[in-house]
Image (cartoon, rainbow, N blue to C red; front, side, top):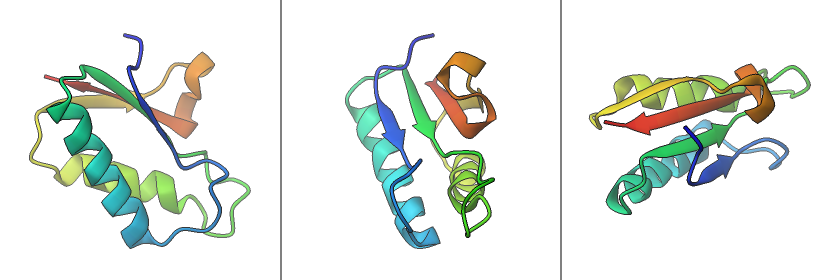
Length: 90
């Protein structure tokens, strides 16, 4: 599937875990309310950040704990590979 919208945390500058969590939850809720079927969240791989992949860990935690009906996996290589997550609402 081709993502209909993207949230990009890669190269955004330092964010706190709470900021990442809030932006992710808001993005997912807005995407679902807008009737989107597939979205992409770019977290970066966390290999060059001082926070050691905070965005990647936090986004995955939000996805695991959410109450929304969705499926997610690492994006294909051409969309970011393991530095991005593709989400499909079901």
